[in-house]
Amino acid sequence: MSQKFARGPFPSNRFNAEAFYNLQEGRPGNMRYAEGYCISNDLEAFDGGFFGMNGSDILSLDPQQRQLLECCFECLESGGVTLEHVSGTMTGVNVGNFASDYETLAFKEPERIEGMAVLGM
Image (cartoon, rainbow, N blue to C red; front, side, top):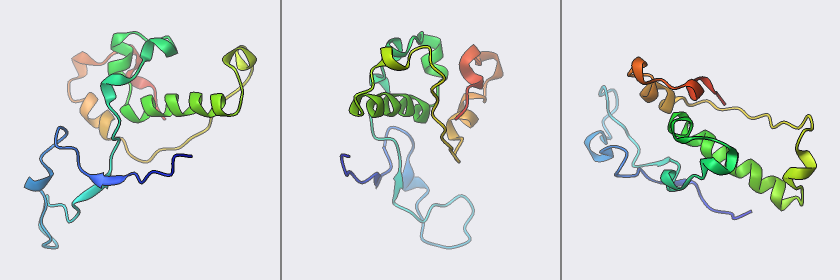
């Protein structure tokens, strides 16, 4: 394990967190937190081709799912399990997720929904 902390400042390229930060309770639309648990990896660095995905599939895939695919592969690799060993077997990974931020953003424009957009975690 890398033993890194996931909590950190909100990425400035995602949204202007300072505009919503306010310690006043009960104020609609404010955040009382200066940090969060955000994916800090470069989302453009995801190698979808490695997982047999094309460009539109990659764009439709939630960044959390991209990271999950990479993490699952790393777990297999760290355990000495090759893809050839599990290929064609009934192998699965069961996970859960509680946030659907990307889904909300992705479905704002229904005419742009791609085929893989229905994949969930």
